[in-house]
Amino acid sequence: MAIWGKVLGAFFGFLLGGPFGLLLGLFLGHKFDKARQNVSLGGGFQGQNQQARQQAYFHATFSVMGHVAKAKGQVTQNEIRLATELMDRMGLHGEARRQAQDAFREGKDATFPLEETLASVRRNCGGRFDLLQFFLEVQIQAAYADGSMHPSERQVLYTIASTLGFSRRQLEQRLAMQEAAYQFYQQQGGQHQGQQQWQKGFGGPNIADAYKILGVDEDANAQTLKRAHRKLMNEHHPDKLAAKGLPPEMMEMAKQKAQEIQAAYDLIKKEKGFK
Image 1: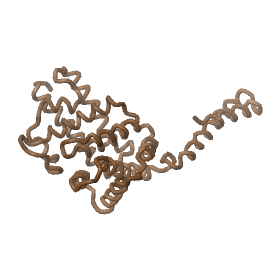
Image 2: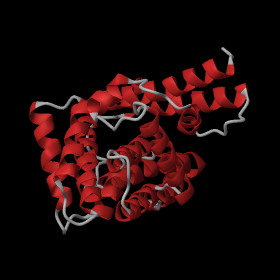
Image 3: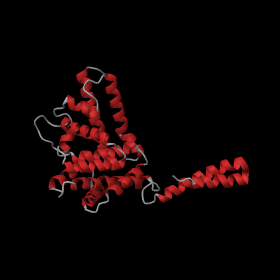
Image 4: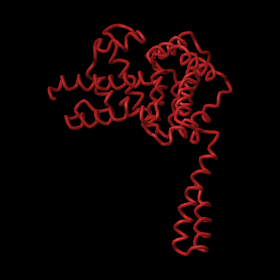
């Protein structure tokens, strides 16, 4: 924590102007400390503008995704196909798609600095829980895109969650929610179809999975369900995420996540018979 500006400002302010000078010196010292701290974080993103922070977040999303894919050893054509489907779901084209592909390849390199990249993401988000959660959920979604998760991928996800400030319990909860989401959008007896399947929506939704998507027990009452739904929608609402700095290239995915939560809630309401 930077405090020397405040200490020196207060000291000299008091010498020159008494109690009033002390307060003025304390205020000016605080401003100095804050500016100095931003400069010292120049290797991160605190001193950069909004567009630079969004670009850094976008790049880190796909580079970390490439690192997770490499966790099993050799990145297979299946992992590349799943990453491509994710780009399709985001509606990435042209330069944005090329940047995502380049970042994904960077993440596959054996020397990729995972923890350093994640620390930069955390600084970049400035403590915004919703953005950090969205970043983690994208990694989970990518790892589980084929309907299963390798132990090595799970271990990397533990590292990602921990570095971003999430507990093991929070990660496990989000893993369960993602598994339920995958099952929720399956066709009965069918296989996952990538982008088309997700866009199709209801193809045989399971009420048990709907509860897991909301993170509540099946015996939850109406008040508990409404509270869980409201909390998740507040955390994943596209407009709110955009206001907090989510890159515009990732807005489509945020919209789909919000629709997924709403669809699960609507199914439960229908089954429960309440409005």
